Length: 511
Image (cartoon, rainbow, N blue to C red; front, side, top):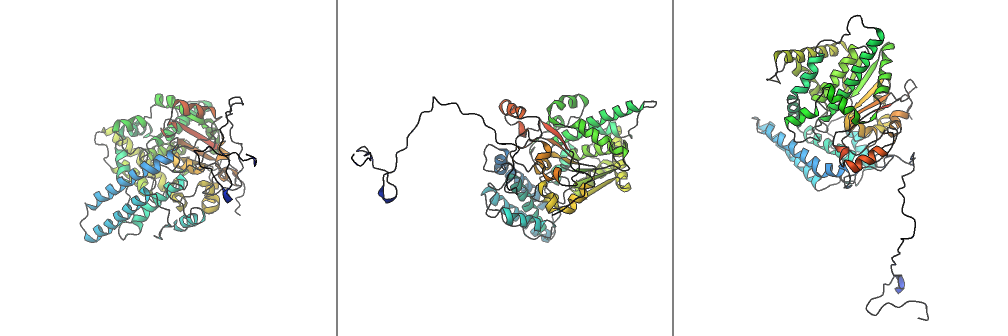
């Protein structure tokens, strides 16, 4: 041992590195007398040097993250949803008689099968075929800049999930006869038809225009409006519980339980609103009546019962004078199973007025629904309600990019007095769908939608159905629920009502 090298035991072969030198053996250290490891939280506020769709301000959720809902979605939920879409299209195929239309639809099903294979085998994300849609350039620019070589599981969950729905759209838009086909339409109509209890609970209350009792003092009127506003905000919030993309198989009783809108139920559920800015929201809305014209925008989420609740809420805002115009923003084509399209919007109002969707309903219940529908259609004719659909809503971009990728839409929203974003997907897009601490303030989490010059007041009404949670007063509530109620982030039991003051009135500027 004169050269200082320890010879290995006779039974072991020496580990050799480059040039035949012996590599050092691994040593296990026992650290029992050192201080224990501390629970150190990441630095906050975080200031990343670069934010882009593949590098959110906090780490993105990705399909290979087994601890996240992204993993269950990409591995189980999306194939299940796509399978149901194929079943629906096959049912339509069996109802056709024209050979040309049949052959065309068979080719659509074949393209859906290819998508299923790509999803199941985790293929790389290819560009979108130019099918004449207004969003093709936006999609392919984002894929080329940020997601070259990415596959369904290692791209950020939000983008990969949206990409799947765009590919599903493409399966039909390249066809000759089926460009407007909605594979989810039957599901949306069927779910609303099974919502009779909650539908009539509201229609029987609001069929007649809202009026105050005679002789009531001004302060009492304002308090009555405040209480009604808070209750209807909750109705609008919890109407989001019925999300077809999450509730793939559901009984009628389960739907009724989710859609309960009685006062006792609302009082019991308010404690489950973990970030609750409802009182600040009321303060903002009541100021609109003093202006010459208050405009409120709804960025819609689900069709059917949730849209119905949104309309009840909007009806009250118009009747009470809290707003003079409501603009509803829907999707240009079928999106995330149950999102509102123009067809869903028209179907709801026409079914209420002319349909017979609830055969067990009483004459009074049917009449209440008809009167409600007639009043809403009148709002449309008068321009008090306006339905819009911009291509940006059906892209893979988050709303952090709305200012740069859709400046016309940002400018349009900047002229609103309040923009209400409904539901889980819109909340994910507002917050970049990343692992921000739950104590991150809402206006920090939504980035340019709060900080850009001219950004409107923004409210998120969201029942929590995915991993991202922000806007809580501290991290303690989320940490406690992680321990006591695993799965609380996807149960729909909890919610947030969050408000950003934005920078309204400032001149909108683009780089």
